[in-house]
Image 1 (cartoon, rainbow, N blue to C red):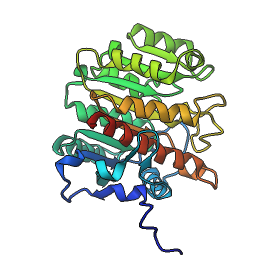
Image 2 (cartoon, rainbow, N blue to C red; image 1 turned 90 degrees about the horizontal axis):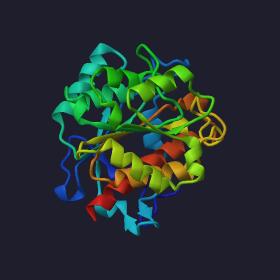
Image 3 (cartoon, one colour; image 1 turned 45 degrees about the horizontal axis):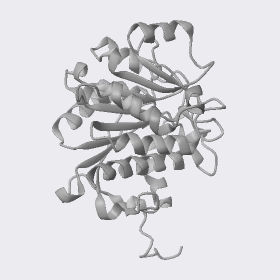
Length: 302
């Protein structure tokens, strides 16, 4: 194994012990893993996605050509580790207490499946879901009944999230149903479907989503369900379909959204590491999504 290149710092160096001090000049960013999978509609492995994404960060550096910034000069991330068995009542209680007691200006949460979105946003809202907005990047409406990775949006609406401040971006044809589309419409949810990316820029779409979700200066939670992407790009996402967003479209969207000061948290979900290809293309894209989120956060501080 070759020695590390001191002139090529790895992006994994951005993660620091969650219990250690971080200078306020770097901003208060926390990363937390919660590998939810037990209630998934598609059976999946228990292999830790958060661990795989952290490992994939070592594949990348800290330098952004687009913004001409080295993330290492601008930001460090408190790595809070992983919630043990987050699908259980005990795990959910630990998630509640972690998100309730630790201060951060910006949270990055690594799933697990999309069930994480319900539990994490509920925890962050602390009983005031009606004060939050939600933007999902997802091929699916997630309006199913019950408690699973197919139901987080319905669960959040049932618990008080305001439908008129929910925007679902990237919804795919032939991946949803008449009944759930009707339910979303009746709840006041805004939908920006996949086909709209053909005539509007990523940035225009994100600005519209931010305007609706963040009306009234409310904090915004962003859910990145990786199956919003084309299946060839994310083979590790069980429900991804051909024709989804490109890797570039997803990355641009995440950086643009996370540059907005009302975005307080983002999750990255719906990867089954056991289904990924040998080149780890799904996990590597997820690691880049984390870096795009950090780059966006740095933009708001410049």
